[in-house]
Length: 92
Image (cartoon, rainbow, N blue to C red; front, side, top):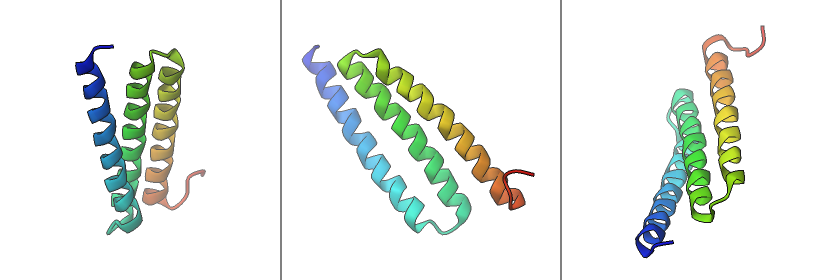
């Protein structure tokens, strides 16, 4: 791996870590439930990107499959939370 790519991956992982900490702060201290749901959805997205970057770093296909699962569960969870906020129940 080239030194430039190694530095870029390290910087990206650091930036994603900071983003996840800020989003966690928003989940814990959000002014409204909608802000918390949006922050949690963003945590799913950043987590997926974090796993993808680690997969590029180690050149392993397992990380890409894990990122796909994170994206799938994130979508289902966000849909359920949005429906709960709109109607007050998930399953009718």
